[in-house]
Image 1 (cartoon, rainbow, N blue to C red):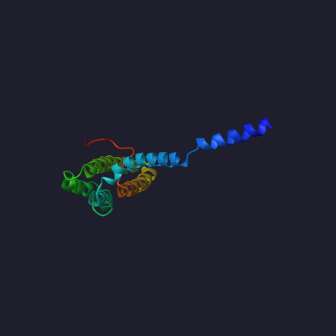
Image 2: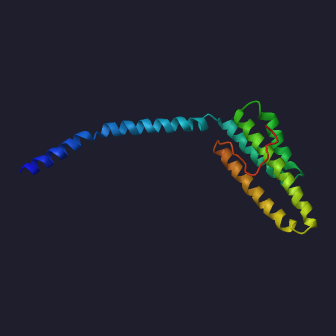
Length: 155
């Protein structure tokens, strides 16, 4: 009989220790931390987001206009860089990438003379398209995209 009383007391005290109200308040506190961290993304206005998307997507003008991949982002960045830190940082990243990859592509075109360029040029072209699309999508998510394989020419 003593063991039955001990088990019921233990179960009762365990039930008293668990407080659903405390759990809900701790979850609310944890949620406030994540909303503060996400607040940085929300500080980018819709206008800034739109211009950052245009900035990254304007690199595709290079498919039509020679060196448009540089002049498109450069034009948007020069016009809007003083209005927003988000656009300024996005523009620097985009320009550094476009300048670096233009030099890489020119080198790959020169390597056509040796024969290896037949592999390098299509590989670089596909990689360039994928990376520019990723940057454009990240800008639409209000995040400054850190382009890979880029030399920082503009600080």
